Length: 278
Image (tube, rainbow, N blue to C red; front, side, top):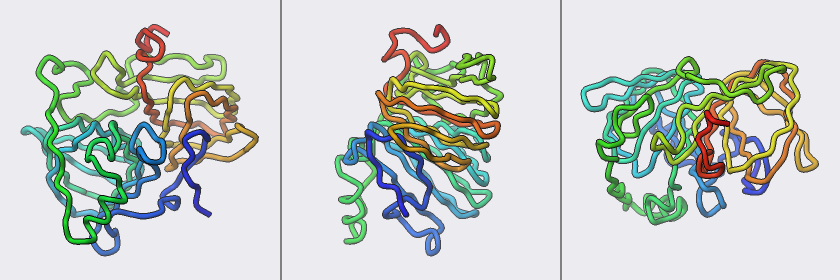
């Protein structure tokens, strides 16, 4: 049974929940499946992506996109550099930055971007699919990269970058006694429109959490059980967990778990100070 996206409900999604794919993996080696976008009430575009080994294509996205690799490996050639990512790692693709994508191993990713597809393209996904099926592929809208004033930091929103959990400089304790931590890669001060963080929760912990923003987590390792809104469900590696603003939940960590969380708006936009000061 597929899970239909509800912007007011905490829920986990898999690629089986995609109602309609853009492209065909079996025929073309490329498939993008959205779980939600602007018409569904999501503040970010949320999608699963599957790409076959050997594929290559040029791109420059009209939004800021984060891809969390859950299977396989890819490399992006961009501005004379090569940026690679494999399972469990983040690939940051800022708006307007050009690159060439080389798929080295059969690839699966969870992709999250801001603004939404509808906001960036000026049409819904349904309208885009209809135009493509009619033989009129909509053009990629133009997008201007950020200026040099944003360049040079650890997180640089003017270039493609790859991040691993080892890149976290400061871990913020959610519950130090139960060994639960969050480590930010970027937030508002770094030029990101979304908060981007790794979470590392050790097994057997129980955590009661309140969500101050809309957040999606790509689970890269482990599993846990969620109790919220009168429901109980389990979340596993490779899945996408959506956590809407204003919802509370209890997390029972079944085994050591690592995830990448992305939320909108940023921590600083909500709290008034950067996350490392929390």
